[in-house]
Image (cartoon, rainbow, N blue to C red; front, side, top):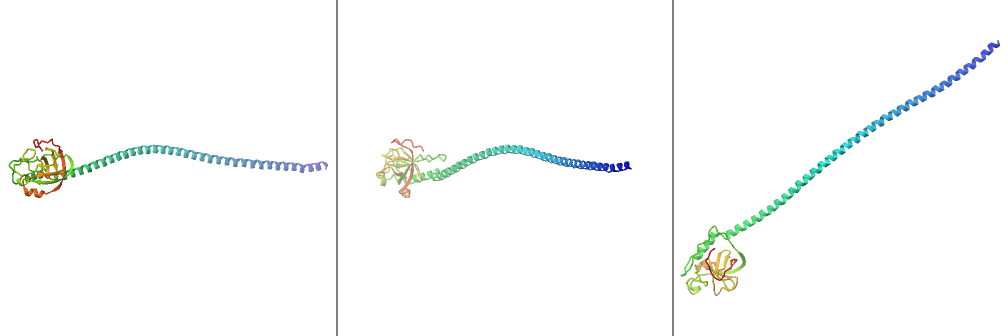
Length: 270
């Protein structure tokens, strides 16, 4: 009986120990499971973080590489634009210089055109044929005893005006007895009168042989004097026809000095 009682009393103790050990093992297993799960979760988090960081680093590297390439492209483009700008500036400067040259040429053409217009106007006024006609008209009328006939200017002659010396009061005279007291036709220079060429002047200012160009009348040579012809800006134009002299009347004429005379009338060559 005693043996059975002892056995029966030890049975619950063993069960309690086993249960206690099982609880401890359960707790240990629980904590180990929690630790393992925590480690797994942590590793997953770390792995995901690593992958995300790796991806972001890769993206950042690619962006940096792309930006570097774009920067190189921009530098290349900038150099290209610089070169193109330099070429454009050269073209602009060249065009500017060409424009200045064109403007200068245009101004030269304008000036030349103005000169041509002026020359054309002068040619109309100084037309040699008209001068010859005027000289022939001056030679028409009553002839004096002595005179020289002017043969006329060559149609190819050029007009040499000389230096402008001012406006002269001009009249016309005929070598007749009424005006000169005789009709021998010899001027005070000792040379025969030349109608349309000879002019009477004040020899205190203009020595014989002086050649003038009178605008509207043509060339004239100082060969004579007259009692009414006094002063520097005065001349008397020799013609043969009284009516022609009256038509010329007294007017102011633009006079140019072609050649100053030496007091003698040499061979008249105009």
